[in-house]
Image (tube, rainbow, N blue to C red; front, side):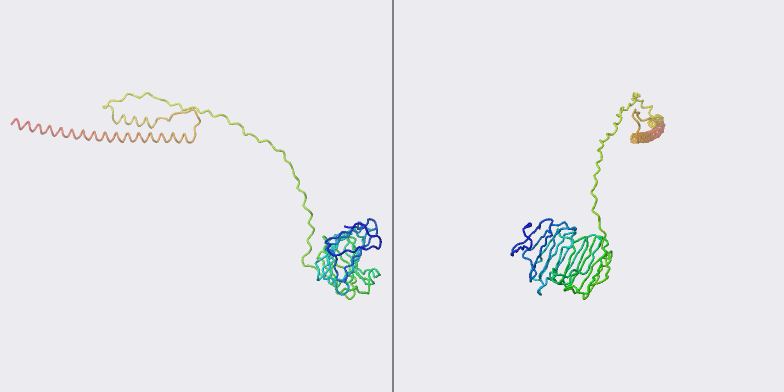
Amino acid sequence: MFTGFAAPGGALTVSEGIARLVYKAPRGLDNVLRVDLGVGGWLPMQDLEYDGGGAGSAGAGGRAVLVGATGGWPLASEVHVAAGPGAGSIVFTSAVTAPQKFTYRGLAPDGLLDLVGATDYRFDYQGAADPGVAISAGDVSGATADAQTLRIASPAFVATTIANKANVVIHTNGTTDLATTVDYASHDPVAGLASLTIVTSPNDSVDAAATPPGAVFTVLTPAIPRPAPVPPPAEPTTVVQPVQPPIAPPAADPVVVTPPVATVEEASPAPNAQDVGADFVARFGTALRNSAPPRASVAASPFRSLRAARTAQLQALRARRIEQRHAMVSGARNGRMRDLNQLGTHVNVRTARRGVSNRG
C-alpha cells in the first residue's frame, strides 16, 4: 500500500506479479489518479484500490481517469457498480486475461472519467429513489481527447462520464420507485456508442426527452415488479417472568379405620335326634336369611355393600340347600318307615296264618 507519495504530475510504474495494490491519496487535496490499461486493456495487478482522499460530498475530493484499450483491442465488458456517494467498483474483462477489478472511494461528486474501450458496458445503481438518475451529454475537451461523452449522474453516487463503449446498459435497480431521465441536448453522437438500453422495473418511470443520435434507444421492463424492501427483523425482547415457588397441596385429613366389631353368640345346645324335623329346618333357614352382616364403624363403600349382598346370597343359598337335603333325608326316612310298616303287616299276617295252621 502506498500513501500520498506522489508529487503533482508524478507517476507510479508497477510491474507484473502484484495481486493487490492499494493507493491512498493525501486528504483534502484535489487528487487525480490516471489509470492506463494500455493497448491490450489490462492491469499489471489483479485488484487496484484507490482512495481519493475525499468524503464524496461537494468540495475537495479525488478524481479517477481511466484510459486504454482503444487501439482496436477493446475489452469484452465492463461492469460498473455505484455503491454510494464517492464509492463504487468496476470489473474489466478481456478476451485474454482474467477479470480485473478497480475499486474507488473518496472521489468528488463529478470525479470519474472512463474512456476505456469496451464492447459491452453495464452501469448498475442500487440506491435510493430520490432524486433518481439523469442521463445527458457529457463534456468534450482535451481531457476527453476531444471525444463526445455520455454522462450518468445522481447525487446518490459519483457522476460518471463515459465514451468508447459500443453497447451501454443502465440498470436502475433502486430499492424503491425510481425515476430515470434521458435528456441528451447535443447533436453530436457519443463516441463509439451503438445502443443505449435502460433496464428498470414496473415500479420505476423513464422520461426520454432526447436520446443520443445514431444509437438505438430501448427501455426494458421485467414482467415481475421489484419487491418492496423488507425491514430488518426487530431484536427479540426478552421478558423475565418471576419464578413462583411451587404451591404444596393441602395436607389430607388422616383416615382412621376402626376394625369391624363382630357379634358372637353362644352356640345353642345340639338338639336331640327326635327334634330334628321339618320345623327346625324351616326356622334355621329363616334365621340364616334374616341375619344381618357384621357392622363396622367405617363409612360404607360400594365394594363393602357388594360383599355384604354377596354374603347374604350365599347364606340364603346354603339355607335352601340344607332344606333340600333335609327334605330328601326326610323323604327317604319316611319311605323306609312305610316299607317297614308294610313289612310288619305282612309278617303279622303270615304269623297269624302260621298260627292258624299250627292250631289245626
